[in-house]
Amino acid sequence: MKTVYLVIGIFTLSIILVSFKPESAKIKGNEKSVLSSSVMPEDIFMKLADNSMKYPFVQQKLNYSYDALEPNIDQLTMEIHYSRHHAAYTENFNKAVESSDLKEKSLFEIFGMMSKLPAAVRNNGGGYYNHLMFWQIMAPNAGGQPTGELAKAIEMEFGSFDKFKEKFNEAAKTQFGSGWAWLSVTKEGKLVISKTPNQDNPLMDLAEVKGIPVLCLDVWEHA
Ligand code: FE2
Image 1 (cartoon, protein in one colour):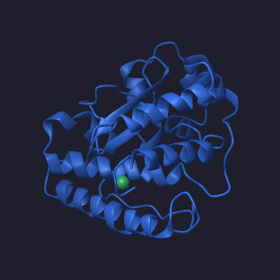
Image 2 (cartoon, protein in one colour):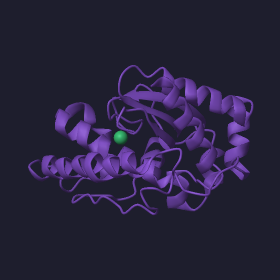
Image 3 (tube, helix red, strand yellow):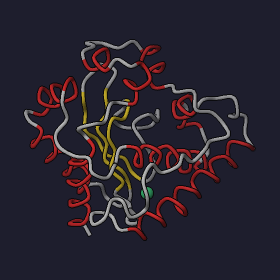
Image 4 (cartoon, helix red, strand yellow):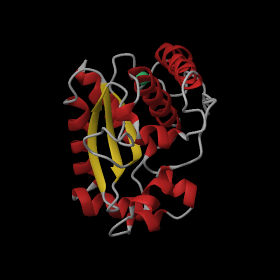
């Protein structure tokens, strides 16, 4: 099974990085301002992460068909993963928020106080957001190495794109049990690789390594 993860990891990295921009950069339209910052104040960091997603949370449509990523990810896996797993996280997250006082909070505000919230919010909120990003960063007929500021930042932080891939795959392979591997931008404006258990993510206040996710890899068996 770990071999499968490795294959998926390499595949994911090779098809997405060329065109993907960090979540924060998409919001601000200026990738350089994130990756070149030496220190990022807490309020600015949270503002970059806040994309105003609020209840009711919507499962965005896939931009490609279930079979578009074959042979790397088969049609049935994609269909089950999207239409059952992610749909369930979305539905259950909405239910958990609906019956709480979190309705007016943004998704990222909720993540920022996750250590104080019930397990249903943590598991389903993470499952909702993590998969949202997962579908978005993959695409058929994409691929190659990243360019521009992201390429420079990867080289500066990890030495080379190949070394980065090696470290990212290592994080995915060594996640014990279900979870995710991440590439994130820290408050200091640095790229960092981490892994989280279950449906946790680096935006949560309880994450060991915090940051704004740039890239993620689902290492659950259902992926
Ligand atoms: Fe998943």
